Length: 212
Ligand code: PRP
Ligand code: MG
Image (cartoon, rainbow, N blue to C red; front, side, top):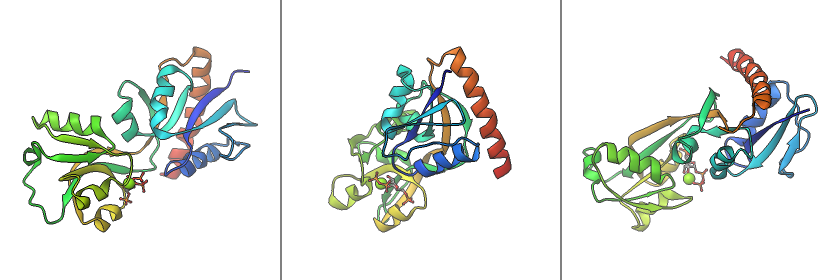
């Protein structure tokens, strides 16, 4: 029997809610995340626990058939990859922020500014639509510290509760993207596995309806 291979975030904010969604859909998964791969005993599905940022490439290559992933990651690294379903959890924004004390009169003022971010493509595209070119510094975590240590004039990162911005004396000035978890599909999915995906989606839709 063919199985659908689905990527789930190995650790991080989406992990628990992703597994909860599968569980609520009646799909039991046997192993914890200690193992990088787990199989369901009651649905033709295998879960691969992967790093967020690697998932778009795995989808593109067809190493996995589908993924539960933040839209923010797809916009940054996988604009070519299709979304089958919006999942309603892990809601966040990808925003630009500047020091609270800074004067802000719109993105035009960021021309030539140093912006620290883990989302270079998202920022570049957003700014280029406004005719602005900035000096991007790519950092993989703790981006919000950058202005305080003199590394940047502004930052672009995920905002959820807003507490990281608050603690670092920053203010959100532009929301570039509103994101949530989505079910993304590999362009290389076979027709046989696509049938399983349809069944999975049917169950997920029932769970989402019951949650609303
Ligand atoms: C994420 C993100 C923001 C923060 C936003 O960082 O990069 O910094 O969460 O959430 P909040 O608005 O609720 O504070 P995370 O803590 O996952 O760590 P990282 O940046 O080191 O990856
Ligand atoms: Mg962070």
